[in-house]
Image (spheres, helix red, strand yellow):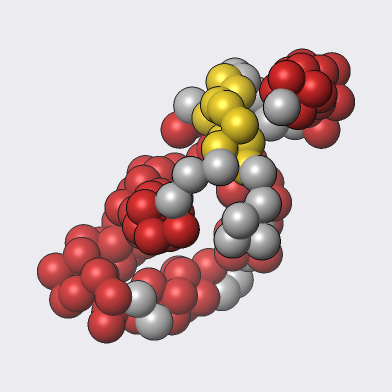
Length: 121
């Protein structure tokens, strides 16, 4: 997998937030939502530190869930992916930019672009 060709799919952050919240709906369970999310954030303490975790827990308690997910994506997951990309290096066939990652849009808009990038190889 480390040497396999990759294609980066780039999506606006608002769409990524929408998709994440729809995909992980159990995080948004009204009964246990705050407790579950605080537990998730507390597991990141060693990686992101107390200050970051405290600010994320504050967003949870303020019920700013869209912003919480946005920060989680940008300040945790994106950093992990970037570090991994730097560590294993290139063999990236290209980038694809799309406004939506709904299944129908992936089939209609993204797959043809992937085929085009692969066929150029």
